[in-house]
Image (cartoon, rainbow, N blue to C red; front, side, top):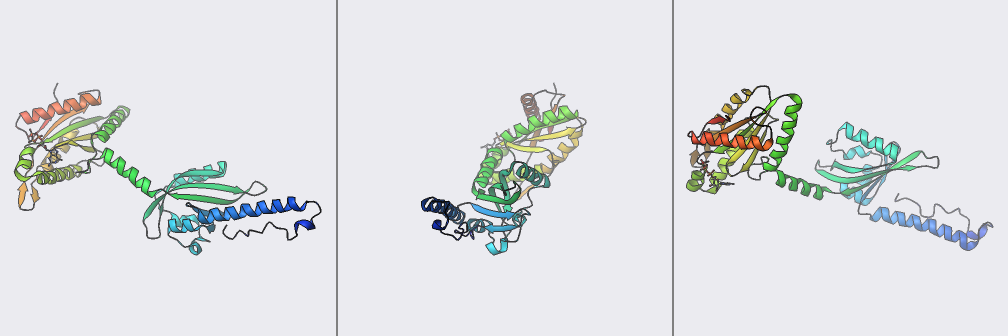
Length: 326
Ligand SMILES: Nc1nc2c(ncn2[C@@H]2O[C@H](COP(=O)(O)OP(=O)(O)OP(=O)(O)O)[C@@H](O)[C@H]2O)c(=O)[nH]1
């Protein structure tokens, strides 16, 4: 497009040579075609958005300077290549099949795509691809317009993470846990399986803070969180509710007794000594368990019953597992 010759629509004749047109009329037609080409050229060169033009077989025939800056490739490298050079491999076949289906049937596709720079780093673009048609209404070219939205995407991701995850341990927070619990109940109904909601509260944690400081308390919380994460199955959810309170959701149980072994192993793992610089601390944890659907029918009831069971474990001396009993 940068090579669009601004006078290419001129016939080589002068306005006065053509008896069919008044001199003023033809020159205004030529002027308007020329002006439009100049404007298009200026838009292409100066656009804040990257522009990539390919032929029908997706071979790149031109790109604007913004596209080169955005993708980190030179114009000469891109011409003759295909947009696959930008691929991040993060989108699957189904994504591209849907893209092509829309583009070929509707003549346009808009969406967000993660691409990769030459150095392998990722960037996100809002991409608008349009098909260009020839006089016979056959597609002759595709024009892709790319706007860099990496900063917005990263900001959104960080906001989502802050809204759903506990910053100290990296575990899901109460909000995300509640979402997962609702999903888990529906899944349990569909698959006729059970699930266990397990409330965990460290014993004597305040004393750790008081004796060794808040920072040491934080290290213990992080160690406990990491032990929990490595001692449940990959699909199970662990969340930190706040302070020294955690909750675990064990899905897909065929029998209520299935979670006993898992929880005993988990409790043993949590209660291993935490080795800190010049200090070793041994955590203790009380765990209360409620089973769906045997003990309760709603998420609120399940959480309340698991909490009740946990207080029973504390009342019985702590560092133990209590199952809700009606
Ligand atoms: N280090 C640290 N401490 C926290 C954090 N959030 C809350 N706490 C402290 O955690 C403690 C929790 O209180 P409790 O549950 O009563 O402590 P506890 O000694 O374990 O009490 P029991 O559960 O009855 O054994 C309080 O002292 C809070 O100030 C945190 O993010 N980091």
